[in-house]
Length: 288
Ligand code: PAF
Image (cartoon, rainbow, N blue to C red; front, side, top):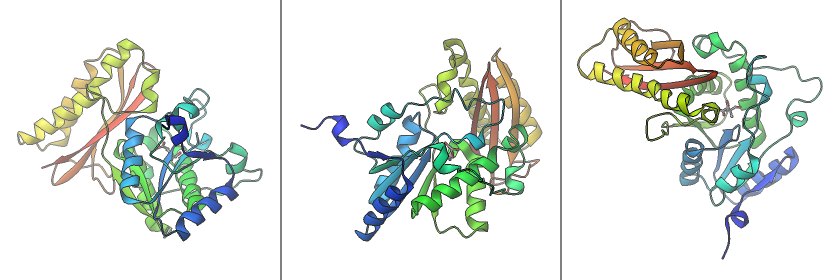
């Protein structure tokens, strides 16, 4: 009988080997799916891997904590790195894990960056000014390295998915994107690798993000359309948690991310809230 470790995917660090293995899968006629991650995998990531497995004959998971998407005062150094546990979780699900070293990704002399325009500017772009430049650059590199047919992203990072979509369209990147639903804990907290930073008291308070989203959905269901009113009510619900500090609560056009003054048709509600020292984001689509 095979145990989990025998089903673990092969984990490689070399670009040449990645190209060879993906090339072989392709010659066998297998569709290639890519799930880019920074590791510390949880059920949210696994839902992306499952989606890839359902659609593609060969699933590549990348695990790389990308330094260029962290600001100087952010958590790059302490970001959880759990490669062995990640490989156990992927047993039987992924075909290949690519976990490159920094030197292979950003060799000496590296100087080319991808700057996505207006969709990267508000919200996360305002609070983390170099974040999306780092994300877009690494994602394009991973697309080029893996050469996948389809890539899977989580809706939890809503703006990231929009930024990647914009880049793919603008630069004619030959890949299809899938954005998969947010996976939540029983109390509604969106799964995130950063949830491990929360102490038990903060963890309880963190449910206010999802409660804020649910409140907005209820308001819209009751006929409320005014963005100012919805935002004010959501802010008040979040501020009920003593350790919550709001970075933003905003309603925006789901494609362009431009602010809206009323919920007409589909609108995205975006939240970023610090609970103690941990910054969490969440979102939902509101439909009038
Ligand atoms: O969402 C993430 O985990 C990261 O931003 C990504 C897409 C893997 C790029 O480093």
